[in-house]
Image (cartoon, rainbow, N blue to C red):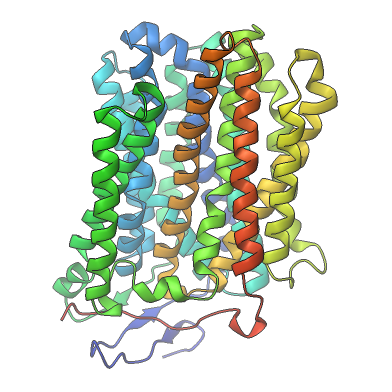
Amino acid sequence: MDSSLASKSPVISDCDVKVVIRRPTPSNARRYTLLLIFCITQFLYTLTNSALFSAIPFLVRKFGFTHSQSIWIISAYQLTFASFLLMSGKISDIYSPKYTFITGKFILGVISIGLGFVSNGILFLTLRALSGIAASLTIPSALALLVGLFPEPRHQAVAIAAFGAWGAIGIVLGLITGALFVEYVSWSWIFWFVSTVIIPTTLISAVLIPSQTKNVKSGCTKFRSLDITGISILTVAVILFIFAVTTGSITGWGSATTLAPLVIAIAMIAVFFFWEALQPIECAAVPSSTWSIPNFSVLFGTALLPYFWWANIFTTYVSLWQDVYKWSAMSSAVHMLPIGITAFVFSFTNRIKGLSGMSAKWPILCGALMMMSALVLFAFADRPDKYWPLVFPGFIIGSAGAMLANISANIAIFRATPPSMAGTVGAIFNCGLQLGSAVGLAAVSSIQASVQDRNGGPSNYEGQSAGFWFMLACISVAALAVLVFYHTDPAQNRVEGSVVCDGK
């Protein structure tokens, strides 16, 4: 076999399975076209979610949602997306990242068309949940494809950085896009716009993505190596956990609808790790040895921070500016632009000479310090006229820090794990991002609401300030953990290998 077209993994004695992976070498034009498609896909997913913030008031009136129901316009997607990431990553690793990616994109495109025509609130939320499942199929598979298309570390780092950057830009530009559609056309075009881009790029992807066939003994072997039991336990646990922290800020942390799913989720997570410990390493959904990979646990913890920062800043200021200061949706979106622009610029810091070879520990710590500095500025920005002296520089400093930590951790976690686990690792990392956002939003909004109730309502800045100080404390603890537990041994830069099991 021509070595330029294929590589052969070693025989795994424990599983007695020989794995052959054919990897055609695509041209640079093909690789970078695919990178652009992956980035656009990531951009559209985050854009769709953030664009709905501008449409929430209209959707509440159209569907007759209560305040507690309206939160599910955003959370229904976030809940299923985060919950099915691990299963999607495992499917991508065992079967084919190409067909996993294409399937997820196509389904999402079709659902997006349907969402624009919905006139029933329950059906709308159901389709939002299904679109989260479809989107979860694409992110781990896209990352697995990126790792395969760009095996050289320097180029791989640039590709991963670009992928993350377009997601951050989509968060902010989604506000502007949503405001434009809601004010001048219709909220339905938020979804129709996505489908008009997703479906054609799906067809292009089907042609351009090279096949990466993993041959094992049988279809049964592939199915059994998915560890359906373990993945199902964790998926249900994540669903219950996110449901609990989301409803906690609405119904109260002492309510049965919060405590019951929270306790069950924690118990199921414990059962999951016990189950995984009983499985052979090569058969587990998330092998226990994964957490012993150098710095893997610390990097997963770091993944909780970026979206924790962005999501809370985003929701806090959109609510403050529109509900209290009475700014228009378009004005609020424009004032958010520094976050997206800065995130895009700092997504390529890994290309700066000297930083590319540096341990991820120091950029992560630098990013955490920048996020913390921004939060101090926000805590004192209690009037509209403090946007330029405090909020604007805080947006730049904090967003730069969040992107620096995000990209550094993302690149480092792929360098520390085997390429054969790229889909699963991408799923774990992105699950961390989503958990940071979901749990952080619930905790911060709960703190803000309780302080505001005691201090005259949302117009009193004490609630927002308390939320920012809480965020500062959380990021400080995370930074301390990185400082203490992150090891910088250069010899442990990457673990090579590939493992597949026949389920015996």
